[in-house]
Length: 138
Image (cartoon, rainbow, N blue to C red; front, side, top):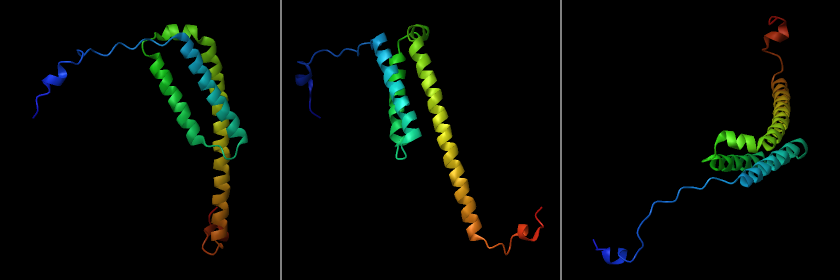
């Protein structure tokens, strides 16, 4: 192997990585605002846009959650809650509305799937071998 000491001598000494600086409160407000905007857009799109891409919306929300988790490092939870109480409250309300829209959408999808399943079952059977057709399945 080659001796690399002649190259290493001119390099600055290695230092440990600096401690991450805590995020500023303004960053939290901006991040909460972006999350609110993403949730609002998703809620409206679920209710109105038949071609809405839920997968990309979920990816964006996951990315924002990751950013929020990273921003929370080094910040006291009580400090964060006290300073951003109004933003968190607004976000919580928007998330509740988003959840209601998602639940309604899932219920509608489930109902359509059940209707289609029943229609397929009725079309595939002529009643020849069904106990219900003879009155025995009561």
